[in-house]
Amino acid sequence: MSESDLLQDDIVNRLSNIEQNTKNIVKNHENLIHRQNIIYYQIESLMWLQRQMNIKNPLPPLRGWAASPDVLLRLHSYILNHKPQVIVEFGSGVSTIVIADALRQNDSGILYSVEHNEFYGQQTKDFLRLEKLLNWVDLRVGELEPWSEQHYPCSPENNEKTPYWYPQHLLKNIPEIDLVFVDGPPGGTCAYSRYPALPAIQKLLSTKSQIWMDDTIRKDEKDICELWAKNFNLKVEYYNFEKGLGILTFLKNI
Image 1 (cartoon, helix red, strand yellow):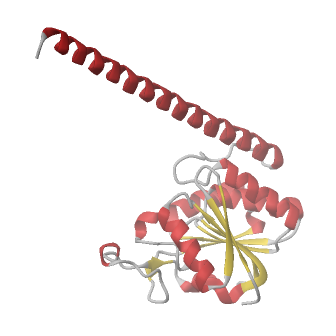
Image 2 (cartoon, rainbow, N blue to C red):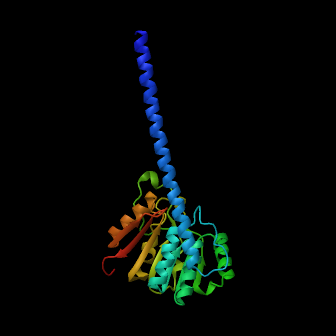
């Protein structure tokens, strides 16, 4: 190969590298803008949520496992506007405080909060007591137990862990439910860990109930919503929040 050919190849390679680097810079810039927009929207949602709530102390941190500000704002607004009287949530925390505050502002309703971790349950109860919200919440704590009823049909590689769910006695003496917020147990408990939520309470639901599934940005939670819709004659709508949200409603009486 002649010297001119080598030089030409070198120029072509350099131009190709420049083109690829330019594409990478543009992509990284677009990703940065996208993340900035998400952060801005979460800050904006948190500001509106704080404006709507009547509490005196800062909310616990809303990162990590906690529901995102955009979902909590929608949840708080929904309760204020639609006034559900009986609410059940799986997984206590900031959502418990947000729901209790909305119920207090409505001056009606009760939240049954189901939690598996005594430490986090006590943290939530302490904050509720601090804000004088305990009257609006029946917080029930019990360690997860093996679940032997209907569950998501896992493939063999996802079926290594025994399915666990909250003790069924925690759901005793709950009247007809208007709203369910599913944000527990943690996804690492087992494959499709939140699937039992609907089978466990389906007989307690009113025909106008809504079931809210947090974290539908994750495959397990979205798959659960799809199977719930199929098995329980529901329609599901997804909302493009930071961690995703699926809202399910009944197509006809169950």
